[in-house]
Length: 300
Image (cartoon, rainbow, N blue to C red; front, side, top):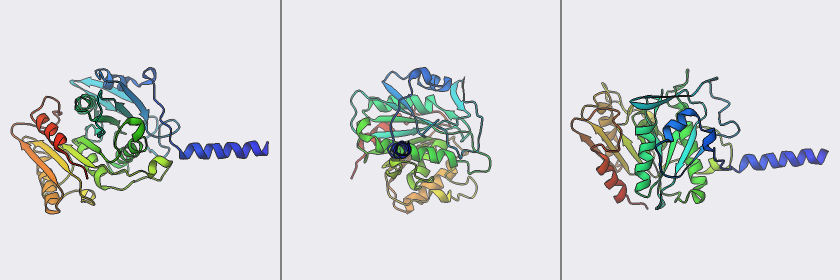
């Protein structure tokens, strides 16, 4: 009996260290996840990113009931079990991108800034992963705190299981909209913000490139001071696009871009006339420019 007990402890320790991908079957998708993925024609698999029940024990939000509401676009709210959806291209070329929808860190605009983008990337041979990160903002924490934990964990899982996903772990980027753009910029420079829980967390959580679509919160609109957490710690290629009518976030983004340029970060930044905030990517004026930038992207 004594030996059986210690054997069970040993097996538990091994399982805790070695992360296993468990596909959540469609029958177990939340109603919001079903809405997010209903138009995705490519094969797909959905995984929870945290172990056990998929929720973090240290998450201060308890008893949330996830919702998905369509009012023009899908808005997912009250997320406490973040997930990662792998969308499978017909002809993958080894590149991968983690997609972070926007929504002010309060909701997730999960179709036009999520699943629509995944299908667009898959058609280019890029393997997309849609991150359903935790929202809304947690009381008493920085607005991005739990979302950053989720994005970093997702990056680790993508790299740890790169062989299973058919990707090159040195060609993993991140793409985000609005608050998801801020999250993408944070993920590009911040080291892991939570304690290691298994071998997956030994991977590098920093992306190899970033695409920022009308990124929010990068700098103060009035003072033009950039978010100090976004100061560059490394050089990776970055693409940034925004519309001229996006007056709430354009001034701060302009300051952020200038700061990156001053520090020799390779960023391509474009402002498009007559475009406002929250319009998405697919079918918009900057779609072809994003496609061209991704096609021309070079890796060391």
